[in-house]
Image (cartoon, rainbow, N blue to C red; front, side, top):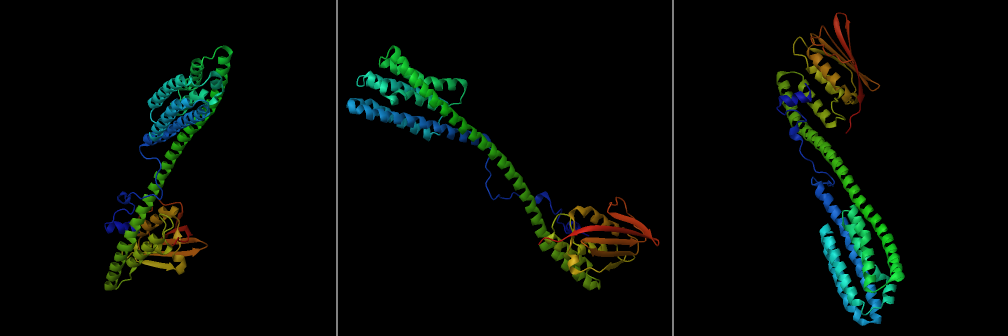
Length: 402
């Protein structure tokens, strides 16, 4: 009788039943929840909020130009002040809305371009053409729009073209408002357009890196979540086994051993069943791997296997107490179970010889006959000696883990 059989007789069911597979909390939180698409959208919206930096850039351009031209003509402060307030509102709306939608980005760009042109129309009365040509800040108003498109759109072919065309279109419009003609206009537009294209190329690389980082971070989170789920399942299985072991070892087997010992004392018999229950409990407490049993537990299983009477067992086991606590390997579980079943089918009398040497257990079973020797494992040798059938096996042993 082994621990599984004892559990069945006591109505405990299978020790590792699915009934015990309860969820176990992880030591760290899972990273990617079931709504992975929502998480990815959230990360990408935070990436889009970087487009708010374009309005900070435009605000800086406004402030720089306002300071420079205020010294020449204080009346230029009005239009620049309005542009500054507009950029503050645009930045706050984009940043607080986590980037907003592409439609919001495009609407802000259209509104900003229109107000920039209105302000430029008012400023040309106070800023001469020569001062305008030297003002590098005002000529880069359009760069802010391309910047916003690069960081706040889906980066399709149309968006990429619009990002590079926006600053050039603004520079052409501003040069027209200030009446630049011929070579002056061509030199101004080529100079400022070249700078805008170079700056936007750098911004495009930054945008690509941010987007790739978002995608890589999401992929890593999904993998980590899968690993966490596997770890959770493993922990749940271990917890189920531990719960079953605790219930069986600390309650059922202890109660059963006490009841069996009381019955044996009343009948004047050796408390073999009680010893077996205690040996099974000790094995469940300290078992290093599933399927392993102690030498003492294996001996008691075989001794208790035959029916009383003509199947009385003669033991020859001069085991050291420490040797009795050594475990068989879990890989030999099938061999151990087969030997126990063979002992149950033995004719009278059955003799058991056990000896431990050099980390191995030599076990011999001898009887007039064994009624069931089907499925004999390769590790068990069968021979006939003096009209008796002898089963011999050698099992590797290992120390218990406490």
